Length: 282
Image (cartoon, rainbow, N blue to C red; front, side):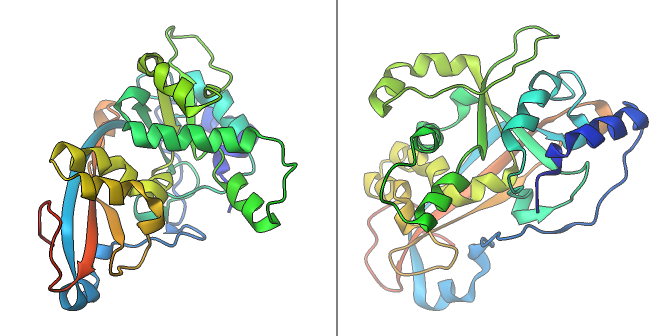
């Protein structure tokens, strides 16, 4: 299932035909192909066999656009980045909307966030993914490993923020060559934005809330959340589960695009085991 943002020559024509104020047709809503995640907080195994050793929840501000907004100017659309988005995502599977649902056609959501508002752990993950796919493929990794590496590319597109209404941003930011250099250049993140589909969040949800665990004084919890090896779709002893427990809808009728989304994560242990701290709740 390819990102229809990227059949964009016909899409551009169609959007122009509808005009800025007409409602485009809606596609059938389906589950995104290969989306393995589901809300784990209603899994019956939690109540009987597993308990949370820590629970962390955090909300984020963003702007949510639809593909119909691709040729609208800011603040209603993504015109400044539209051409670059077409190039970047061409031929890549759409990772899905909220909860892995795919509205198809013009209703597919895209998120825009201030890059500096994204937790550092997530920024580091995005940048490392870009470094990896930018390397030469002259190594001994298996074909499956190479495919997995390639699949990470461009789930998040980082741009220098457009500063003029008619400015076209034509390429993504190239990350610093090393994580250490990127850390030294963090002040530049205040001049950048990141654009992604909501479905891109789900494979790295714990990274979004790990700093909140640290802020609450649970370094052990934060460490567990930062290790994606602990994170899986199914609850397990010693594992991490997470989900987007809430997301508001922008008031599109008033031309607004602002919204918030909330991510909840838990580290799990066998029922009756001692907790290492954090909020204990389901």
